[in-house]
Length: 107
Image 1 (tube, rainbow, N blue to C red):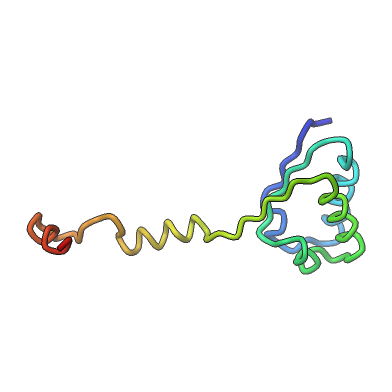
Image 2 (cartoon, rainbow, N blue to C red):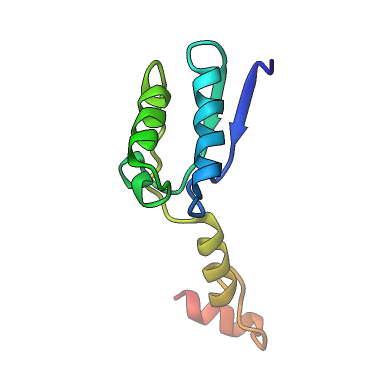
C-alpha cells in the first residue's frame, strides 16, 4: 500500500454515484492506516453540492477530518493575479516610453 496519496482538485467537478463510492472506499481503506492529502477549491461544508450521496459524503468528511491537519487558504487565485498583472503591464513601462517619460511619471 502507498505510504501517502494525493488527490488534487477533488471538489473541482461534480461527481456521480460510482465516483463517490470509489472515493469513499479509498478514504475508508486509508483511514487510520495511511496518509491522504487532498486539495479542493470548496470547503467541506460545500461538498454536498459536489457529491450526490449526503450520507456517504458526511461519512467521508468525518473520516478525513479525524486526526487531520487542515490548511484553509482564503487567498486570491495566483493564476488570476498573474493574468491581470500581464494585462495591466504592471512593472513594465509603456511600449513607446522614453527614459524621460519614465522619469517624469515617477515624480
